Amino acid sequence: MKNIAIALTSLAAISAAPAFAETTYLSFDLGYSELSEGGETLETLSGAAAFEGKTGKFTYGAELAGTEIKIGGDEANVSEISAILGYDITPAITAFVGASSVEFDTEEATYYTAGAEYAFGDFTVGAAYITTEVDDIDTDGGQAYVDYDTAALDAYFGVAFAEDEDEIYFAGLSRDVDTYEVDFDTIIVEDLNVYTLSGSYNVRENIRVNASVDYFDIDGEDLTQASIGAGYMVADDIWVDASYNTLEIDGENVDGFGLAVSFETGDRGLRASERVMTAYDVLAAVPVFGGR
Image 1 (cartoon, rainbow, N blue to C red):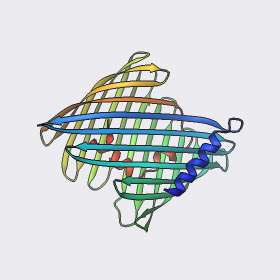
Image 2 (image 1 turned 45 degrees about the vertical axis):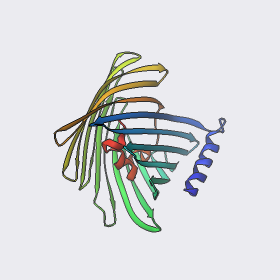
Image 3 (image 1 turned 90 degrees about the vertical axis):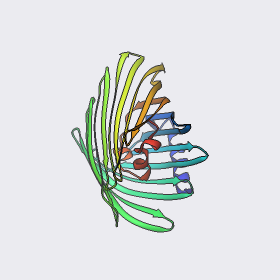
C-alpha cells in the first residue's frame, strides 16, 4: 500500500503542472442500493473515481474504488487503489507499468503489472505480466487482450491466467451514440459466469431512461438481476439516476431501489487501464458488490 501511495502522490504532482501536463479523462460515481425481503435489508454503497493525463510521451492515471455491504448486523468492505504509467516507445507502441492494492475486510492482495500495447487503426492489442502478492506469497500470471474502438462502437476480448488458477475470460461490446447507449459484458470463470446487458435512451438532452438485465451463475446457483429507471443531467456530464431493482434467486424475488450520481468526461488513452483485471473487477460483477 505504501508503494501505491507514493505512486499516487507522484501522479498528482505531475497532473498539477499545467504547463506540461494535460488531463485527458476524469470520472466519478457514487451509488446506493437497497434490497428488502422478510424484514431483512441488504444495503450497498459503492463509489469510484479515476483520472488519466498525458505529458509528452508519458500517460499516467490512478483509480480508487470501493464497496460497503450491510445486511442485518453484518458488514463487508472491499476496495481497490491503483496507479498506472505508460510511455510511448513509438506512436503505435506503449509500454506500461502499474500497481494495484485490493482489500477485502482485513485481507489484502497487491498486483504489480508490466506490459505493452500496440495500436493499429481502430485496434489495440496488449499483454501484461502480473505478480500477485498475498500474505508474502508471490504468484505469477499474465493477461492478453484485443480492443476495437471507434467513436460509436467498442468491442474487446481478453484472457487472464495465473499459476494454479483457472483462466478468466472477459469480453464486451458497446455502442454509444447521441441518442442511446447499449453495453454487453461477460466474465467467465469455472465457478462464476456473468452476463450483463444495459442500455439508456436520451428522451431529451438532459433526461434519459435506463434499463439493465444481468445473469449470474455462481457455483451452480442462478441469479437474475434487473433494473429500470431514469436519470437527469443536473450539470454538464453530471447525471443523477434512480432505479427500481429486482433480484431473483432460485425463483424468489427480492425488490428494492437504487440511487446514483455519476460524472465522466474525456477518453482513456491506455486500454490497459480498463482491460487489465484484478480481483476487484471480478467481485464488482457480483450483484451485491456491483451496486448497479
